[in-house]
Length: 324
Image (cartoon, rainbow, N blue to C red; front, side, top):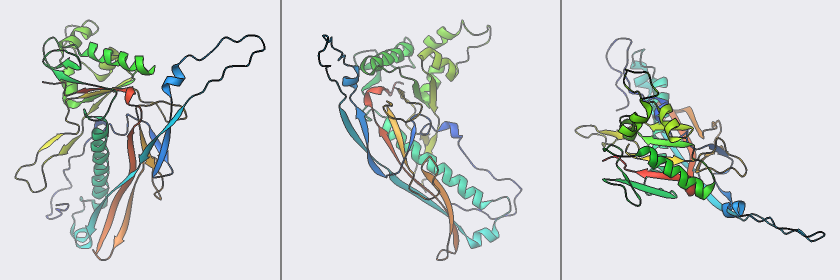
């Protein structure tokens, strides 16, 4: 039920709004504004770029020729939209603290963020995403398995540094971002190996406090980002509402993400934001308001058109379900 405006009440309303920093979908991979909803992007051959091709040349001899093969990938920006009706009768009867237009805008903004976050998790944050390497958590280390990071004797620092080495060896790039599920982040804050590394660098006798900046230094990445957004998992009308972290909360993604898009710039992923909607922002969305006389309502609507693309699988290393 979108509306509950009855009663006199006080100048107070309650709403659950998640912090923007809990969402990672717009902060990991660079946004790329595009003019076409569907198009191709180009991949220069990594093998050609990194294969030595220089040749000795005798005086007067013709120079040997080299080059880079070029392949293409595809993206298609999908449209997503949601409206919020404000019927005339509701508007006339609403208490003054219920700024209905503001509430509609906040609700739709939250919906747009939830939509992107859920699609981001499906595209990039599962064992089926298709990253160059995916390892899983287990009771003991083995090929393709890391020991659960919430168990005694686990070595998340070595596991992540090994992931960096794997990506560096096959791409030449150092991973610069680590995305942690919320539960994974909490367990790393109490992991014995991490506490042991940090306890000598913090002032005694207080407890060791593990911040994301500390984890970034230990893991040798520029940023450690935590997926803190939740979503309702129960259907509307269920006897009890249930909630969970978007992406599940128990995994981690190590990757290289370019600071910004550009020619011959490698990145594990890109977000292609279609700019074809009038009034659209660089993020690919817009919020508009219009009148619908059939409904005798004002409509506030959010619309966005984007594609989240896994561009370079070898620039990612995924840790799937690393908690017991």
